[in-house]
Length: 291
Image (tube, rainbow, N blue to C red; front, side):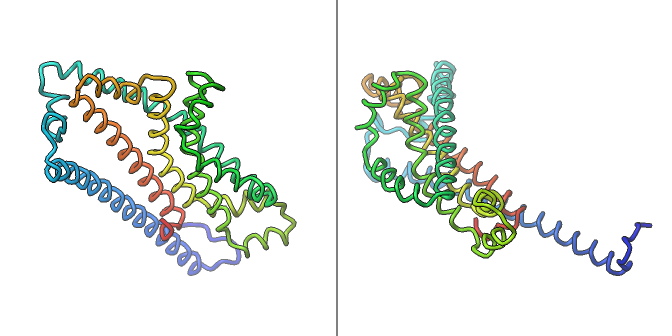
């Protein structure tokens, strides 16, 4: 028989146990619903992309010599005599691009989080630097690339800077908005109990900003891949970004379309993986209504 704490009746203990079981069951159901919605969204996204792809080739009457459909890409990767060499080449380049994407993703997201936290702690710094950040964001990255390459060279550092810039600004805006969405009453409560600005940030603002943080991570995934492609094309070479130009000049249109499909597929998969993790995590934390 379960021991009942002093001052608590057996009936009250049973009600508490039932309530806890109900909460666990509802949390599990919410998690499963969120997971199901995310998987369904992913499947529908893939179907929509395929329909748009085939439909665009048909509507614009693109020559089969230039425009390749899903079957052409499949044949290029799996049924042609040199398919194994094609897979080795294209997937090898994809892994290089994804590696560069990870560098830009981490660099941009970490800087965005740190800057957003500084803005939250000091409104003066935010008012001084946020307009500069938005002004810098308005400058085309292609125009900034020569300066970045001149400063950091054609190596790993340029990949981090170019990819980080693509990720930084959208993530920064989302995270700043999330930190400001914290309940004023909760902030006042922390202040009443003697909490500092850092305590309010750590105990209230950061937990409240989780939905916006996940949104920043979601939009940063395709942004990081775009940044990696730009860095490969403009600075370091290698990967799909460095190879596509050669494919186009050599009229290797099957390779071009396959490269685009692989990059797009990787971006969709990673985006939806993050979305699934976001839905499950927020559902378990009771924030499912903010997804």
